Length: 223
Image (cartoon, rainbow, N blue to C red):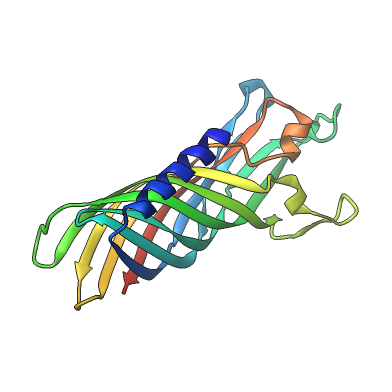
């Protein structure tokens, strides 16, 4: 995590220092989110599927050449998939059944990325490629649609998960000029979690790790 902070800071500082032009915008990000599980097979901890999530926010592109920009912003985004595990993980000695948890996490996403643009591939249209990191403070959490764990003195489910997530981001898309300063854009991005988001399952077995995986459709307008 420390290396991610250092790299992100250097990327932001260098890009801002050489920025020539600033474009601001808004975006929405419908996405498919799941959990990437790292655990020994004998633990029998499994992912059961991905879930639809939705996000929205503001973006800022700081251009340091005509074809390259430092891209950041602030977005409210949802993550989390569905997992299942043996009852014995929670209640040692139990031999019956499995437990399924649908995890819903809300983050404030702060991307620290570089966008590279081609020259026009059609009239007023350019292709972009995006890569970098994001730092994501956790804002809230639900498990199976509930904020409170009724089996544990109504403790908040948010306490099960780490307060900070970090992703590597890879994306591509199209940008279309529709006015003197107005641009529409659309693309796809992959957000791969770099750190374990979990405290709860790991406390039951320290070989279990959960990391976020998200594929987003990025749609927006810049001014």
